[in-house]
Image (cartoon, rainbow, N blue to C red):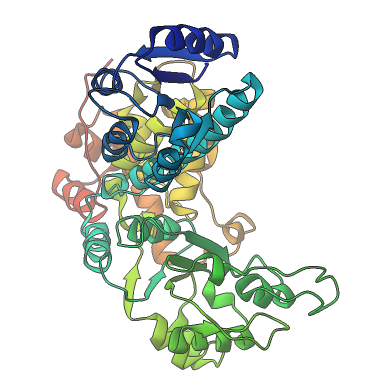
Length: 459
């Protein structure tokens, strides 16, 4: 789609010539004979650049520029001016104009100036869209769940957003620790600054220090040039240290120094550099236990653990699964371009009965697979992967005892109850008869397992 350029000039012949020239160069020209008319067009049209005469009656080019910058600060303005007005054009650049072209001018000069201005405009517009997308994606509305333990997480995020406190997020893999870290950043005063994430477990120990703090050319074999580290990249913003429990002790000491002194030294450099970053750390380990075993620095732990947030496992917030399925399936189906009506009650019951060792990440993969497989608008039980109905522990398959007997018994109990309820269309009296227990006993088990019953018409 061609860029739209608003041409503003009070001389009819100049408007005609420039309008035709812009069209020949591949642009979509809009024409205004005065500053007020230009502002009226800007109020109703999507414009990528304003090309304006500098000296005009009613409203000068500089006056028009000030109005444009007040309403659309990122919209580039290029002036066309006679030699006698160059001084005014230079002043206009100081006030926010992109550039000026002196009369008479070559078509190639005009085209090059317009392309440079539009390239900058496109970058600024894309950055703004990306920022709006990130802020929307990590807003509170996208933190899905009504269970008490997840509401505590949302409340904690709200409390810590505005502060400068370091945050330690603890929870199993796949529970959404990075999502929470991004939500904290994009709802904080630092949201316009960088959010830099690094997985401490994914980088070899020999390279982690350089990755975090940068290095000087020649600091070690392979350091062929200077490199800026993640802390420098995150200056004025937030750095997210994922899986910090796997960080080597030597690097932990340097992180402690950044926390205490707000400074660091790149590898191979004797120069100390100051940095202002907020640290959000995350781990799936028990750091208290790691401190007790001497695997994690106690002083660093207390520095990081200023504001702890515990992420609940998905099996501990079963009541949120229908909400998560609805939210994730909408996102995934939109991305895939496949319209679905949702998941059937039977499918939701089956998904609620699975322990989800991979947490939300595993749930997301399951939903994506089910949407791909589904032949009907409503995803049903038959579209779900088979492992949801027989999620055995590896040792149990080999004849050994399960890893957690209580958890395995609860899983089996949940499975049989859901199957009975599915067969009886959610009628608890009939389900209790199938299971050989009283209706009161079934009711207590349903409440204990936090199951949600949906009655449906029998076939």
